[in-house]
Length: 299
Image 1 (cartoon, rainbow, N blue to C red):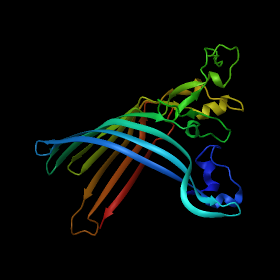
Image 2: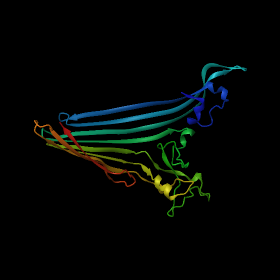
Image 3: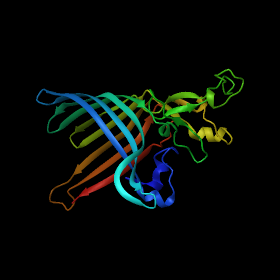
Image 4: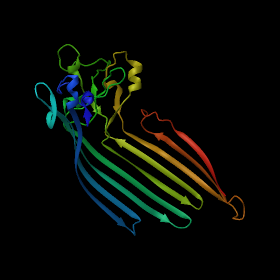
């Protein structure tokens, strides 16, 4: 529930305009309703050493804001009464896709252990209904609009001008002037498919863990370059939108256990070294790589 004073956070200026002394009779309800269908299949083979799961989901979300009036005008005064709906706005988003997981225990003995795992997802995100309030995107401090929500497309699609070989904005309408009517959708900020895989390996007292991730079917915005190369008021264009597909070595960790005589004060020492973001195919991602080491003592 939201009091009248918070209406601008949820709705356009079309909501009922009332004087300040009557605001106490108006309240709004932000209601999120989701209908979802799921079906999944899970199977295990070789005494559960090989496991596979596959799932499909179809999810529809309705985000609605409703304004209610709880008062009745009696001429000389107001009195509380049953709620009457004054205003309603809603947008509907659909998410459909597949998810799959695979895990395999390759070997497992007292001295040797090796396992693999992988997962992948495919998602279709689409706006089935869009209210005027939800069409605009969040703006930066410089009032730069980078994305827009449009019916039939994915949430948060990049929105701006097309450019020619010289970097000039294109007049797509052919009216002889470049204005807001020449802006088009430039790409999709939501990955269409993504996943990862990894392995855990141990031989005697040495162990190794590796994790990789990937994503594709979307674009990235180089906002840093836009601010560096343009002048205020900043304008969005396809010069700063590029493919966001990537493959990453997310984590690589190794450890070794030194075991001592149980009669000693120190029973063992474990040395660990691990790194994150060690490899990235897409240079747009500027997350720095890091390598850390640690030692633990078992008393």
